Length: 133
Image (cartoon, helix red, strand yellow):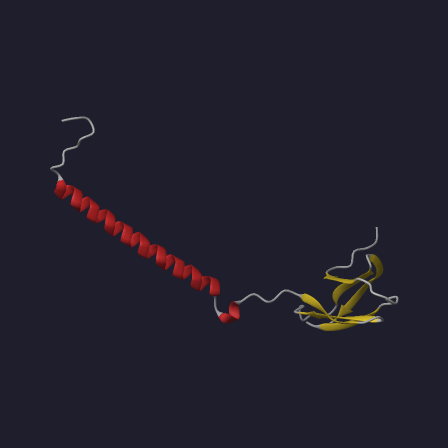
């Protein structure tokens, strides 16, 4: 017999081994599919168990003399603090703090926009007021 040539008379053992490997592959595939389904169900979760939407804001109206900002999805607690920074053509015009109670507030902030076309940016954020350094 040459090197590399095996004894090919053990076909009974080879078929049994192949059949066993095929069964193990089927079981692994089935377990993988079941695991994927279980993870998908867990990711969806119960409808009531979904996380709350994070606090957010949106500019609802702007004009030459004011900007109106809506804050929503805040905790239903007193003294929520929000900050509004307005710039016109890259120059800061105002930076104000506002407090409100409850999950939602609409704040109208006055602004003086000069005549002509300008870029008005409104930045909103919330959190604790930091003491000046």
